[in-house]
Image (cartoon, rainbow, N blue to C red):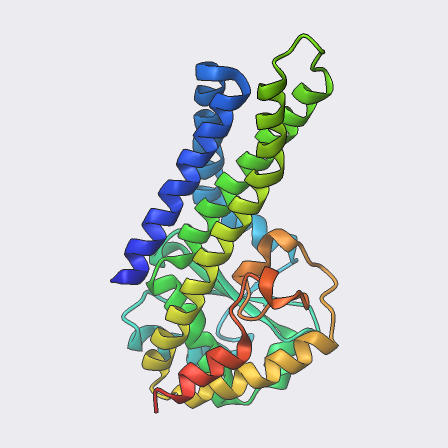
Length: 275
């Protein structure tokens, strides 16, 4: 229950921070504009985020006759998780990875790269699929999308603030200029840290719930060991940093401090402790 409470608090803080930025830029009018930007971004992300992300990676939907083993495996796990059957997509990438998307369990999809299908054993692939179904069950994708949308809106307002400072004159209040300059530096950092906190928390929970769905935490633990190694060796051709938090492992080898994912070793350790 603490996971859900913490996520709600973080999202509320991020929303209030967005409104504060708007007010600091243009008073009450700026605050209203910031709210409109945030609401609009959330509306678009709620209804169209899954289609946007899937098209970004050229994902193709598959049916049972295309990949019967993969399709039936996901169907079996979805039944164990008491979830509707999600749509399944294949991404033509050699890097082994996967992600789930969709606004709710009834409008969900799970995407696998060809690399992950070729690399993992059936049991390991079951662990990965169960992890992604856990994200759907926990409604993590919607939460992370809302956070990303508000963070994007903050970026827009920061850009506007930069232009305001460029055209500021010597007659302007120097104290206000210093405050605005400080906001330009601090705001993106706070938005990033909040996104990282939300994403990392949800990954640990998805690992735990996914292990419960598949019935054996070792399946996912073994899969993560392989994915951690090969995802660093094989680059992803179609890659956007804005979607890195959606994948089961980070598509790009960032420093752990700035990664949207918790350390793989810690995830594996927690899974093995579930035995």
